[in-house]
Image: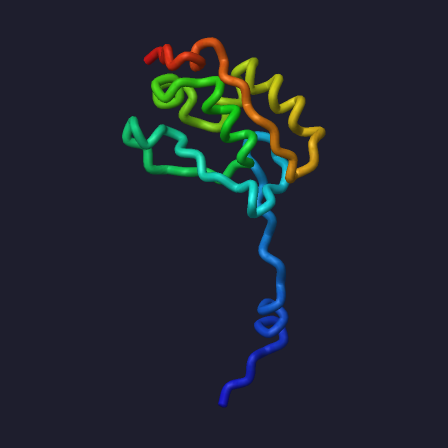
Length: 115
């Protein structure tokens, strides 16, 4: 019967690596983790990334699905937007489990979505 070496046994009890939000770079608690489609599903997107719920909601409060598909389909593009930069500067000082309601931007509120 084969014996388990010490490294294999010790790995059984290791904590999983924490997931970092690609928007705010804070640790995401399991109950705050949401998958964000880089290109919205409604526009054929399949690739997702884990984000804080509050960061995910802020993205959808600022941008329309058309904007996300055409212009903001990468994390770097999202982070270059001034409204997202302002949000990230604010949220970085909050604890990982912080939750707040995102406010719709003028272009998203009322569902007057631009392509």
